[in-house]
Length: 58
Image 1: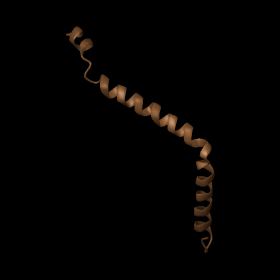
Image 2: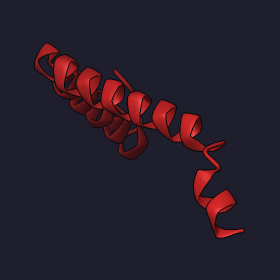
Image 3: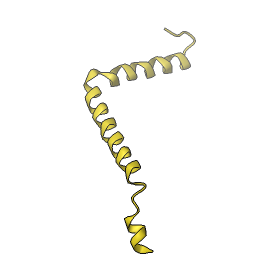
Image 4: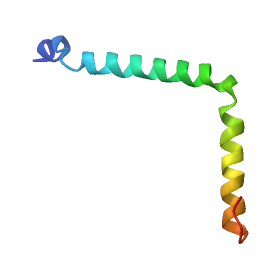
């Protein structure tokens, strides 16, 4: 019974695909970081904060 449990590799493909997706996701985050996404996101958050705290939105 223990040998059949150790030989069972039915979930191995799911783990491999998850690792590939994780690596690609990390690579995309690192590649897109210099494109000033953080700056535009920061300005978006600032605009939303201004709109929520003030009467006029710009």
